[in-house]
Image 1 (cartoon, helix red, strand yellow):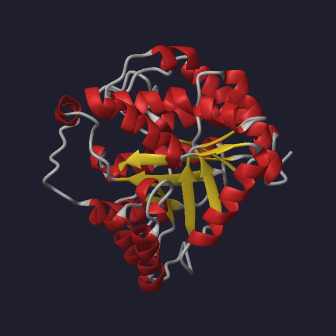
Image 2 (image 1 turned 90 degrees about the horizontal axis):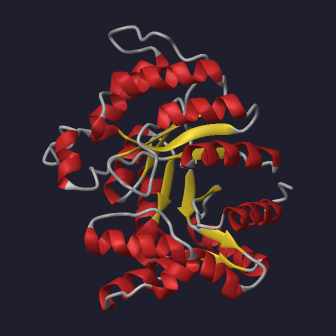
Length: 310
């Protein structure tokens, strides 16, 4: 059901005029059906015709660069000129998942693997990849502090979120890292100058209170994941309100709500404008979700309207 709704959401936001639809990679997480981005994107490609589709992202330490290149080259055959490859370095969510992925967190080959992957995609590797991409597949780095450094060295665009944006906290450290990325950026054939997208939860409703309620299901799931190690499926707002929670869980819930951009259309427009001014970002990656699918669809429509997309 979650996968079908994801594909349906992609088709819906395409009709609203959105530019891209991203999917992520997670393993062994009960509340997230996102273990195979390339497979899910193939379904999205079949249900859409114009919107760009991409991964935000494929966790490169889990895969061999050749396999990732082959998957996204194949995907580009089904959606020529529409495929973006976002790449991250996050480890598996739990120790059993990391063991199942044969992941040694002591080894860090991210920069080397990114370079190898790029050579496969642009045809300069020592072996020929089959199929070759039907059209160029741009690469993006889901960046933390060290990821920003790697992206600058390789001349790649970045998608930043979480603490780097300073939402609900101090933005200064993140802004310093973004400034360093721009200052040390080395132009590449793909990207002639630094490029930044910002990723955050965005939910819009008629009132501020309604928007805050929409954030509760995901915020509660995040609080549980931080305290129990399990990110569960989202539940209705009433169930979140009735749940018994520890002081620590309440703290995490409040932190997640504070870091989101949620409110009325005017409130969200103002907060996003401030975020773009502060970061100099070129694009927003909106990642909001909630239990109420009708309310989520209405939020997507309202966000599209803010950007003149509907």
